[in-house]
Amino acid sequence: MAAKSQGEKKVRNHIPDDLVFSILSKLSLKPLKRFGCVRKTWALLLENPCFQTNFISIPHSYYDGTSLLLYEAVECLDYSLHCSFYLLSDERYENQVKLDFPNPFQEDNPFSDFYNCDFYGCDTFTGTLCLKQRNTLSLWNLTTHEFKVIPLSPIEFVPPYREASVDVHGFGYDYIKDDFKIIRYIQFTPISSGRLKRLNVQHEDVSWNEISYEPEWEIYSLRCNSWKKHDVNMPKRWCSGSYEPLYIDGLSHWWSVSENCDEHLLVSFDLSNEMFFTTTIPIDIPLDIDTNFHLGFVYRRLVVLNRSIASISWYLLDKTIFYISILGELGVKESWTKLFVVGPLPYIDRLIGAGKNGDIFFQKKDGKLVCFSLSTQKTEELGVKGAHFYDLAIYKKSFLSIGGINH
Image (cartoon, rainbow, N blue to C red):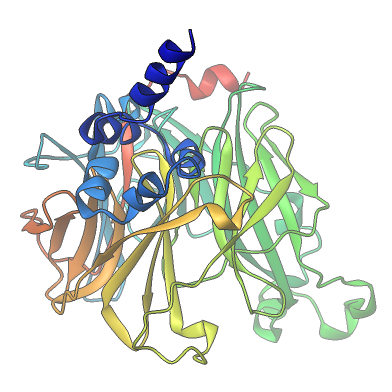
């Protein structure tokens, strides 16, 4: 029995490396890092370029039947933005279909021409877009052609003697309560004299001492079709020139910084229990950059890579090199793993986002859209004409009715 036990031990200690590679490359990052404690060679796999490429390019069932939804904004002569939406499909996004606004709504809704329309992303689970034109928020299901204008909040018109600046932080489907929710942050400033005049209100008639300018959080529920105040002090979104919140599995995420601006934070908001928690995002400082540089020099975009939250960072001192780290476990700073360094890409103007199969999208300096494959390390133009601004999201058809929730 002792000899047999010793033999079994030898077999267990001599698992072929190619078999180990095949098994571990199919794991998500959290168990993968846990197994890295078993053997040093397993822990070093994440530094292996072949393993990194294989890890990020393994097809995930989440992306089955999905297309790439592209938002394009072109600046007109009067400085307004004409916005368009495209669905890009096929292996290399060669099938490009421009979306038309649903006919039943073209006459009386504010989005009929898509002028100055802000795109707040697409919830893949419900196939629903969140849009805003001026102060009007709307939901649009591309599959069912349903369109829902979100009602105004009491904050927006009572009292009328302060200006409100509204910033949508996240939205998505609450699958536990079968609801669709939007969360936003509102800041206030004193109302201008010009607007008071337009309201036929005299400055001396306003009770200025009774007006609060404290910022507030609000949550919209599609099921209730109303807004409510959310009395939780959460870190607000760090503005970086682009909208970047993410929605995964009932959680909405956005990038923020700590109160003293010395840490980057991933804020995760649970749409069901309406609570939040944070995960510190480490700064991947290149060896050739002074470690005393200001945190504000770091730019960051949150994306989803093969169903994992990823942070893509770059630096004001060098906008051509991009550092990509994957989060293994929410709430655990040490679970971030730097997997890729992309670049230098001197022809790139800005990062747009991520698609499926390890594809990263950039806008060139001439305005054209390009796709960089982490698997092949090659860049390919998508044949999309140059625009002022792009954004993108993963889209999947869904027959979940907006009207069915809002009953």
